[in-house]
Image (cartoon, rainbow over all chains, first blue to last red; front, top):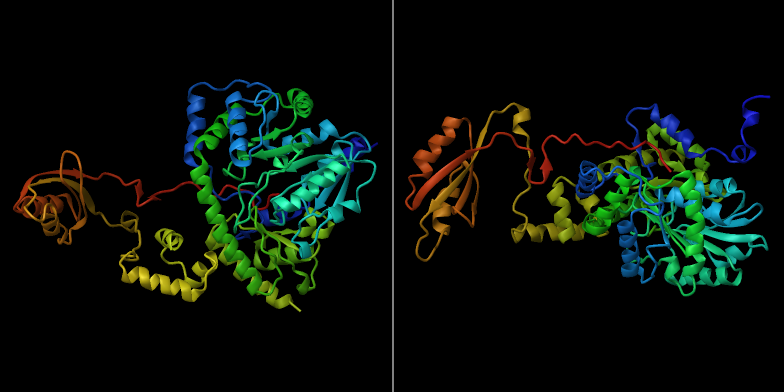
Length: 390
Length: 159
């Protein structure tokens, strides 16, 4: 028996992230301009870093409560009340986690059992399906299309819902497409969830990164959705705090208690240093965050303009920091496009297929990088596209 | 137009087509706005921030706290003008507090600067006293960190 045979079947069942291969190629090359990075290019604002250093100096180095620092939970609850008029109890309806990644894992493990089906609009973040599989459930991808600007509709979902469907897992503003759902769009999804009695896990990590007059609607703010929804959010994208690994989940006390049970045995608590920094981010970080958002918005215009000018079809993304152009007129597959581009022009980006099969024919470009680098990448991509466009 | 100014304040070299794309406007609109801002002297000049020390120049910079007697009708303005007209003077501000004018002077050497202060500045009619502070090391200038060690530490590709 080989060592491979001894790996658990549920781990063997999941494919390694499609991003990994490109990372390996790009890491060995010089002078790569990367549009492949799924995190802000800003460093965490200084006042947030400084508060963490001060916390360390004051000796904040111990465990916190399993749920996380109460003052952080209170700040989060206040924020939700202010921004979306949804009320949560800081004592038993909030859980601070190690990034949204942990929150997602906990949410799925808490509610999914063997054979349960989880509906996931695709293209979607790379870990959704894998986490469902690891939780013992069956991930059911529901394709969305550029014709509908990658928004999910009830008609799409109706084709895939079965008696076994238990959860709907959505992430808007969306990584990789930049799609945003309006309040009306989401209301229809809410009605669908009610009809089929589904739990909705809503990953809203990009909620603050929204542009061009679009507005973010928090899923649990919709009528009757609060108790049905596990709301996930965090600090990585809004406050440029990816490496701090700090996120949170908001849900009814039963869900939070179940998630906390797993969390207390596996993670115990999120790092206290990151929790202290997160408190500072919520109390004084809004000014910086807005500045970053307007910077992203300008880059968004620049990259959209550039992609369209070189002849690639592209819908205008209204959220996150990704643009998802179609490369179908080059006659290449997403993988071929990404790999050839990387090798010949040294621009790294991620093929759409890394986010689901329906991402074929598209590429994800992150504009979380400086304007100079975006301009350089655009001219290199144009060079490449000119040679291939039919 | 505020956004346009903020972009230029940070990087005056940005080409018009890039500015237009970023601000979702036509190149013509941007050019017109720039013309207007220049004409109205909202945009005063397009300077370059240079680290002269790195280039190899040894210049001396001092801030001089100047106490003056304000004059009837013109207050501090006339005396400020007599000071800021000198090429050696980099900037002049009217201040609240224990002195009136903050004058920044750049010279080739310590002697150069102190010469200027004692023979030119202190002798101007209406100047009561001067106090010179010599700059030892710049850390941040006009919002730019001089020797910024922070760099992009992200992975090349990430989810």
